[in-house]
Image (cartoon, rainbow, N blue to C red; front, side):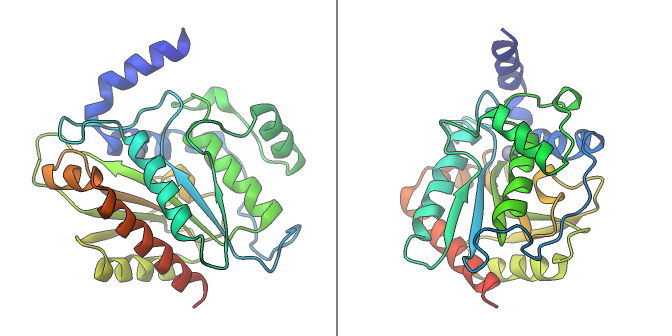
Length: 262
Ligand SMILES: [Zn+2]
């Protein structure tokens, strides 16, 4: 019942948009987690020589994200679709790709908690707003475990944006945390994407308190990319276009490779 109520609530706020939901993910959940930044020196890594990319499809599992009549579906459906296309784009590259979830299943919660305990990471799901397994909080925890156990090299979370009463607002937005030691490079990464992708990419560094939860708990390069506005007719049309999504996936994979091989 709780999940059904949550779904109804989320449906009710869906048009309030990704920004609202992601803002909740980023800000309201901040006090519940007390971990120190981990190092990215590969300590405990099982595969130090293999470059590992972690892709995160925003929302899912009862959290539908944003929507619009132009998009005709929910954000969570677009994000997993795009993430799987990016995974495919990496196939011919010398890199391992890990997804935080595949849209159908997610890491077992008991196993997640067990691993968090092993790494002395505090888990307080009762304190978070979007307390639907598998929330942004759980995905951030899973990212943290992967960094410590496998030494992932780059983290990308895909989302869809929306804004009420401003159909003209469009384009990409790339977010990172100003506390991330790679922030200068991440800003450059955003600027390079701005020269490659088919619309403007605004790159924004948030201070720790306001940063999206999936971008701020580790020292690895972590970004959240809003691939367009569900509330903009042209962006929504593109997000329903397979060729556009494949092209975006190819460009993102290539630029991530450029970033980690620089
Ligand atoms: Zn979102």
